[in-house]
Image (cartoon, rainbow over all chains, first blue to last red; front, side):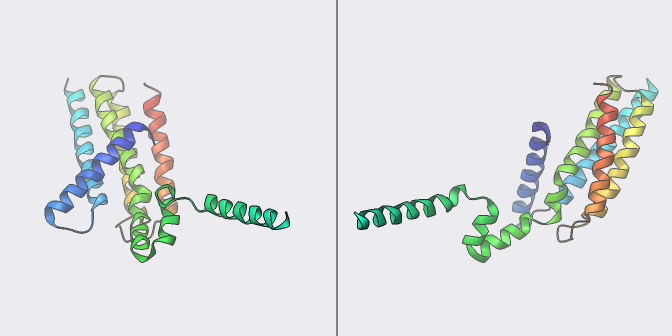
Amino acid sequence: MTPAQARALAAALIASADKADAEGATEVGVLQELRALDDAARADLDAAIKAAIDN
Amino acid sequence: MKRTLMLAAACGLTLLAGCASPSPASMPLAATARSHGSMAAATLARVGTCEMDVASDWTALIMFRQRAARDVTNRVINVDQARQVQALADTVRIDLDAACPSAAARLDVARRDAARVTLKTIAQLLEKNP
């Protein structure tokens, strides 16, 4: 794992923990957080591809 | 003299035993679980669930999509290459979802390994155009 990946994973884990705290949950939904981040990254890449075609 | 030697040997053995049993602070997680009972074992079980086995792969997937978005915007890669990354990334996602569908699931090692092969392909594709 690169340092950048480690920081990204740490940020995702902290975000999951914060969400769990806010909801009063005792389990951290790491997979849900990672899936949501991938959804966003996929959408961003789609948008970037479309913009590159349009330009 | 003999008693002194026996005492010295006993002290030496005690010291060696102390060296073999590191302090809890420096023990790896597995050793901590063994010496600190069921609560630590439960924590260890949570840490050992499949979600942690695939977390780094998910992170790599996300970062590769982000990098491809930057690279196609900056014309480091072309649209076809970006589409290829997206398609490969989608395959990785399917494999990772199958490898670990939920935190409580058992890891499907074959699907996790298949995801890693595809991640390497994406890395090579992007690194051809640094």
